[in-house]
Length: 136
Image (tube, rainbow, N blue to C red; front, side, top):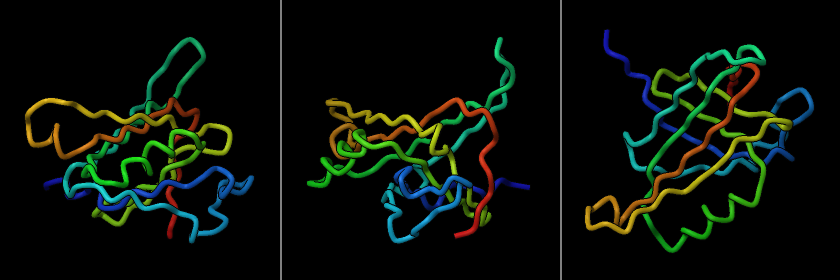
């Protein structure tokens, strides 16, 4: 059977909007990332190191360049968690108040269409626990 679970939604949520128990306080404060369809992927791999097991999380997507580029740059100034939903209707919350995700922007100045018109957003973190399932 084919995997039909590609990401269909990504939200950024400030850690100030996460309760001590890990719940979203106000869904109105979720910020949807408008990514190019089929460009988003989420990978979470269980690994071990000298401190024990951890979960190596990586979320990537491509967004169109626009006059809102500063919006994504401003995200760098905040601590946040990321909520992802896939086409199998599985929604996860990645990161916690104490373990917010890291964020980077990758943009190229090449001559390819994607280089000129798109920006890659990358979210990552080594988490102590697997990301829980939630419902929005």
